Structure formats: C-alpha cells, structure tokens
Image (cartoon, rainbow, N blue to C red; front, side, top):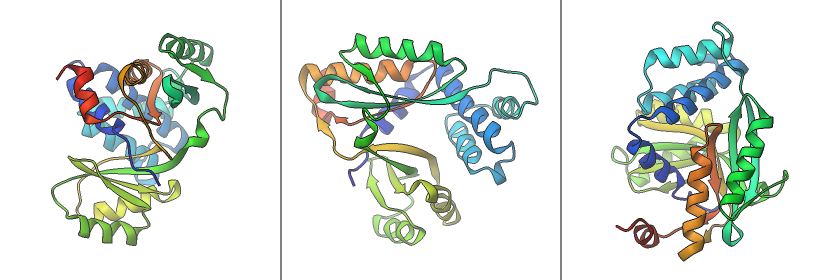
Amino acid sequence: MSGHSKWATIKRKKGAKDAARGKLFTKLNREIAIAARIGGGDESGNPRLRKAILAAKSQGVPADGIQRAINRGTGEIEGAIYEEVLYEGTGPGGTLFLVEGATDNRNRTAPELRKVFERHNGQMGQSGTAGWAFDHLGSIVIEREPVTEDELMELVVNAGAEDYRDEGDAWVVYTPVTDLDKVSTALENAKLPVRESSLVYVPKNKKPLTGRDAEVALNLFEALDDHDDVQNVFADFDVSDEELARLSGD
C-alpha cells in the first residue's frame, strides 16, 4: 500500500497560518453537524461524532461552538441541513483528485467546483474518474515523541491496523474503514495522544511532479480546499521537499 502523501502535513501547516481560522472552523463544525444528524448527539455512542469533536478541539474550536454544531445537527436549533458529496476530477500531468464536500445546495456547489478545476488546467469528471486510484482507509495521527517505532508497530498490528508511516512530526496509522474506531480506542487506552482520527483516501501510486505541472497542481489543490463547501481534498501527486521550497521561494 502506498504511504501517505504530504497533504495532511500541508493542511495542518496551512491551518496554523490561517489567522482568522474561520473557514477551518466552518468545515469542522459542518462535519460535527453531519455526524450528529446521522448518528445522534451523544458522542459515546457515535464514533464519527467523537472523531469530529476530537478534530475540532485539536484546532481550538471553542466548546460552545462545538455544542451549537451538535444542536444544529440534531435539530435542536435551526440551521442549514448539509449533505455529503464526493466529486472526482483530473489535473495537470494526469493527476487525479477526490473532493469531499458538505453542501446545502448541490446545484451551487458542483458548477462552482467545475470552474475551479477548469481554471487550473483540470476537469471535473463523472463518478469513477479518480476513485479507482485510491484506497479508502482510516487514518490516525499520533504525536511523534511518546512512542518508539517498535512499540507503535506492536500495538497497532495487534489492534488491527494495516500500516503506519513516519510523517516527521507525527506517526500516521492506517486501518480498514470498519476498524478505525477500534484501533483509535486501542491507542487511546495505551495513553498515546491521538491528534486526529478520520477516513481518508490514500493514492495507490503517487505521481511525482516538478516544474509547471507541480505549481499548477498545488494551486488546484489549494483552490479546491479553500472552497466553502469543500471538507477535504485528496490527490495522487507528490512534490519533493526541494521542489516545494523552490516553488515557495524559500
């Protein structure tokens, strides 16, 4: 199985630089509301809600904001009703994209995202355009310091994980979709600080990009991620640290 790309790390750094954090908070709160609407407002009996709250807390979303999102999801207070959508598309250099969204109006979101693709040398496609190139997995991000690789490997293999990767400042553990909550609970019981727990799409094979293709693909990724109705973006390209530094002028 291919390892995790840099996107989780890039998005964490991007979020940390967002002074207002308004868009990030909105995305996190939408996920909480959707999870509460589907599985109820009690996080002890709703693993998806528990993961959404964990992600929100890790990014500093206030407790009252989290509770309001739960109440909107359960219908205790009025608010827009969001549905989950998944769009697929292609980008420069034959790259493939999956875009998870939460929208209250499909007729608005789809045309807007189609324009984003087209502005960055891409094209939004039909279902099946890109999904075949990704594995749908559970992903658990753990703080790097408290555990050695040998300790982590023994723990996650016994818990049912499929793979793990060293992402520099954190460990990323991959699980089957159905085992995400079980493995996450095992790590928490072992007193390991879980930073984030979510379902992700991991590319089966990554396409290395350089030069103009790398620049345009990164711009497409960021433009999609910045859209108000987009929750997550996954892509199958990879850009080396050296190329990232060159493109950013570092």
